[in-house]
Image 1 (cartoon, rainbow, N blue to C red):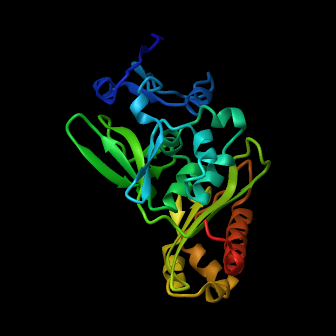
Image 2: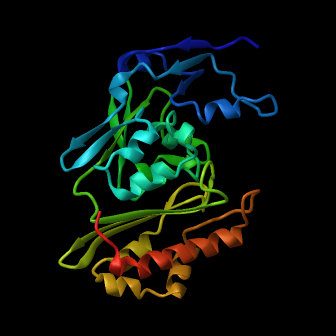
Length: 285
């Protein structure tokens, strides 16, 4: 088989010019390399487009009370950036191993379109939007809508994910809960990313995003609406039965080598109930 040509653009314009049929975009390559093994069917790419040299795609910058996160920003940088909401820092700090976090990228975690993508899950709980750019247009897609199925995204062949935008105001409290076989290099069995905005002591807005519990990351919109207008104390009193009822209509866990669907669902209910129970005494971000 003919080896694919390698391109090393130094600007977004050069990167866009390299896209199209037969091209694979490479960020940190933490998912790309493991897939390219003899026993797996792998697409025959004509070109590999490496984004390391596109400096404008890396870095975190303040933007209107929120942040612009370049697609090539390393996950380790997200974990260490104390300006960012706690949910994102925690998700980044729990992704893989220290070595992996030093090469993995924010954009790569989204474009992998894994239901267990921790950083992507946290971004969904922050109402983040993904900037998709082509040579003729620019559009924004909510992070929660980026993954359409495992391994598939809303990105078009001629588009590049350039950054993720988190709009202000940032949440008053946020947290990421991950359940895995092991702390280092452990893929989520179940994950919950939660963000809360408060006004006059009551929940103004809530976002609850679940990872590894459906074909793509899911939000419990009905539960979010139920929490709005409640005090922290009132939110802590939402029953486990109500949580079970709502999540039963949202989540679609599966059996695999890491866990069973039954276990995953029970864990999702428990971590949600624990989150709400402890909300009354939780500290602000």
